[in-house]
Length: 403
Image 1 (tube, rainbow, N blue to C red):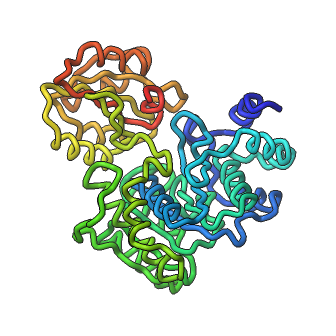
Image 2 (cartoon, rainbow, N blue to C red):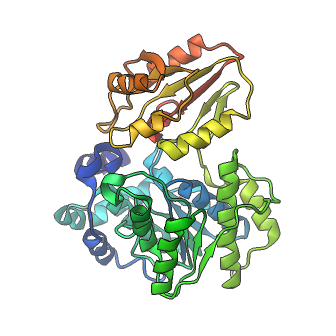
Image 3 (cartoon, rainbow, N blue to C red):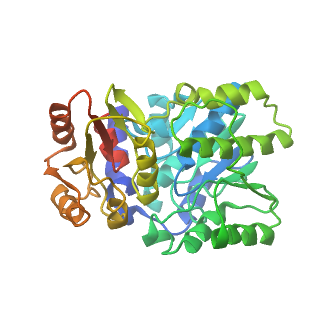
């Protein structure tokens, strides 16, 4: 197969949660264990850092990978979802997996994939681990897809586990309370393996303490009040918190005799975008236009804090969301004095723009509906003056269509 034929096969054959939602979700690890067996158990012996959390896990994963790369290690990085090219999910020292490797993997294992009806994400986890083993990476940073306990990545034994934050997201799968969601994320905590908790207090922190105690795992709660002395390559107080969490994970690796000096930490935090190719985190794409993959209430709260740092005449928000989020809670946070451009991403899970507009009206948000993301973005660029600000947000898939 050509690479294009390979992609066509994968997207047609494998259910992809980012596109179809619940139909692609598998509530156990049986498929992943089968894939590990078929591919020679690449997860065994893989030195890695395992990162879970509601928000911030992607940025934290990239910070950790960037620091390790600056320390001179060959670093695998598996994250999701992707923005433009699904190969973004698989990187070694910032370089995406080559097309011919993807084709080779599919050709070699498609007969094994088909009978077990693996999902797109399960297949991707197998590809990541297999490729990292083939390339003999020194260490890999592995971001969970959803949850932790039943996430396909949860077949590894990491050097250190990391849980960034807990918020109300994916409640259909993970539970309706913060404690229930924390319990699912805590599923990545392994016997005797240290776990770093980025932000948690009260009952949520107790969930993590109880789990860690039950498996004799050392647990560290990051002190987010300590000033960060390094400059970082991502903007916002929330990224400062993610960087502190990443530093705590790096410190734990240093205790385990990984050679990572302060120069590598400083350079890695500052050069995270250049080293890893991270996009979509309050990213400026024109002098007055920013894109951000915020997609839930906690993410929009961070967005509001970022907006306070800027001066502009009027705010224009190109907004689209997926239909399985707590949309009402998220909309209640967004600024009422902005002009909205409602649209639907070109995926089945995308919420119809008209439905989004109707829900937004309840919260005092006003704007027009557009037939596509590109039309909405074009309208915002036409209407906004040079002194205005445009923000594109609400979903990874909305951002992907303008980047």
